[in-house]
Structure formats: structure tokens, C-alpha cells
Image (tube, rainbow, N blue to C red):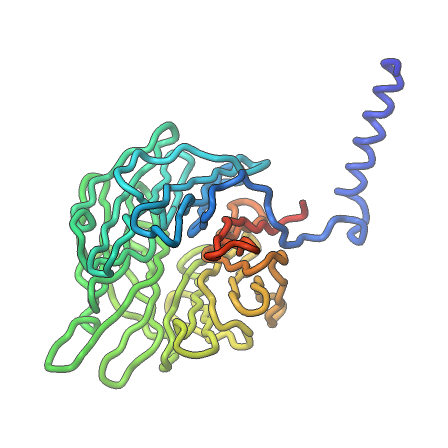
Length: 380
């Protein structure tokens, strides 16, 4: 083919592509949830969390090479990285032992944090390790509270302005640990969450979202005389306070997200103790329950650029993603793969793209093995 013919062919392809993207609305590709191609992982592999810093940088973390018949001696940390085009394997922190990565958060491409833990025989033997990526290498951040086996359970991680927040619980007491840039500080929980006067009070924390060093929100549940239900918690730079949202029933918030503290969404469920879910939206002061979500397990919520939330719904026979638009819930089935379940979801800043991570069953394996999956919401 001559130069002119090659140039004409290239131009025709460009015109066709431009027509698809800029033509009439009914001719453009529709956004949809699709399985994202990812590198081959060693069974059993599971992705537990995902975070995006911008349109070309996201990280998904978990574990691979886990043998359910040798659960205390197998498994290696797994990190996949998005570069704006596709997913590839990324370097992992230097770890000692079989560390499974559980949470990831990123405030920029040069400030990515992950937590990991050793597989424990007993819940009282939990350990937690913390690592930070500065754009070139992973460094372990000493975390004395997690170094010794204990009942400490870290449930989520958030970072903002050089600070990091780890939240969870130790026995029935909530834990709020802040990395100030130089050291860890443990903040006191709200008074309602502390036993007193012979009454069993407790709170659990499952999720955290930091907007500024003096504006951090956490989500979970609590119980004390006259109250049992989902709770939010707010840090104002001085103290944590418990925030009731008008729901007094056996539910616990599992995830929280928003574009700012003036537009927050929190979702929760019964933690396997019953059916149903709870969703609230608020501006930091007033809260409104958003009914109608048909899902019994809702481990994650992410709010996109438009302000619409996407909520994971793990249910039989197929997982789904649910969004709230024009005053109603719209359910989109997750990509159809055997036994798929999703554990976390994130919005990609500056875009309407979403990533959700989890696993699928590997049919025909005994004992049943799992394979990591990533679902992507976009036009491609």
C-alpha cells in the first residue's frame, strides 16, 4: 500500500472513531460494568481493596497462592496497578512471613498506603503491618500497636495531607489511630462507646474517610441503653464524637464515601444476622435514610464525579452494582462469572470510571479455589 493510501486509511479510521465518540448520543457506547483483563494470579487469589489517586494510577491489593488446606503457611501479598490503560503486576513490600494485604488508600501517586496481616490461628493473634509507597519504593512504617499478636482488628485505612488513619476495634472498644507524619497517636473513643456504670456499651468501626486532618468520618455501629444500630463518628481535630443518623435497629455501617463532608453516603447491613440493608445520605449535620435498596450484603460504596453513589450488592444468584439516580435505585448486574463476590469499590478521580475488586469461584476445583477479579464501569 502506498503512502497516500495508508494515510487515507488512517484518516478514515480516525474519522470513524471520532464519529463514535462525538456522534449522536444514541450512537455512542453505553457505560457498563465489565470484567477488566488482569494478569494471571496464582490460586487461590483474592483482591480485598482498591484505591485510585487519579485517572492513570490505581492499586488493588490482596493475596495469592493461598491453599485452604494449608491456611497458616501459604499465601503471598498481591498488588495490581492501573496505568490508565490496563492492569499489571506491581512491586510488593518486603515482608516477613505470609502477609496478606487487606487495605489500600492513596492521596497521590507519591503517597500510597497499605496494611497487611499474618494469617492467624486465633482472632486473639491478629498482627498488622503498615507500608507506604512514595512513588518509587515501599517502606514499612513501624506500627507498634499491631506488631504484637492481640485482639486488635484493623478494618479500614484513609490518608489525607500527609496523615493516615487506621480504624477498627480491640475487643468491644473502637480504635482510632492517626499517623501524624512522625508518629502514631491513639485517640480516645466517644464516651458512649466506653463501658460504664455496669451497662455494656460498645462500638465497632468498619470504615473511615478523611477529608482533612480536622475532618474525618468513620462508620460502624454501637449499642448502649436505649440504642442499638448503625453509627457515624466524626473527628474535628480535637475529639471523636458519635453521630446518630435516625436509625435504631440491628444494622451496622460497612462503608462510607462522599465528595466532601457536606455530601456523605454510608451503607450497611445486618452483618449476616438477618436480611436487609441501610443507606443514609447527609451533609454532616442532617441525615436522610434512602430506602429501596434491594441487597442484603453491602460491603462497599463509592461516589463518582457526578455525585451518584455506586453500592456493591453481594447476593444470590449474582452480585450486582446499585446506583441512585433520579430518586430511585437502579441495579446493574455484575459481570456474570461463577460465584463472584466483591469486597471493595472506588471511584477514579476526574472520571466516571469505577473499579470493584473481589474474587470468583474456579469451577471444578476441590477444595474450591478462588481467582481474583476486577470489574470496571466505563464506556470501554
